[in-house]
Length: 123
Image 1: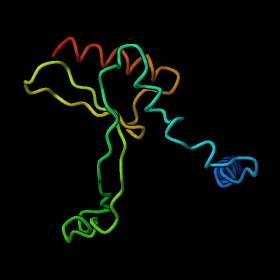
Image 2 (image 1 turned 90 degrees about the horizontal axis):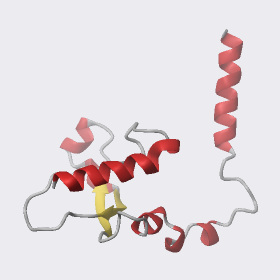
Image 3 (image 1 turned 45 degrees about the horizontal axis):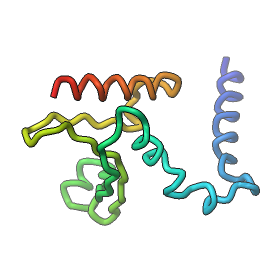
């Protein structure tokens, strides 16, 4: 059993270690705003009327870092897609993130579409 686990860990770490070492991959050609997932989402049926926004955020690695404002030393820029329902009243907010532990990729698009539609129906 220990050998099997050792082999699995070795495969896991060695495959992710070489993930970005492909010589034919050019990040300048493949990682552009025109190819952004957010651009594609904003064009899907049912997602129109929103806007792509950028805002600053910070990552606090532990409670102490946040208490002494150490997290402010490493700001990051986050890009997201914001869509609000019509009207000027208060609205609840739901944030989907890739690290939320939510549904797998095979159901993600359908899940997001129906979740957004249900939230819009509720106002």
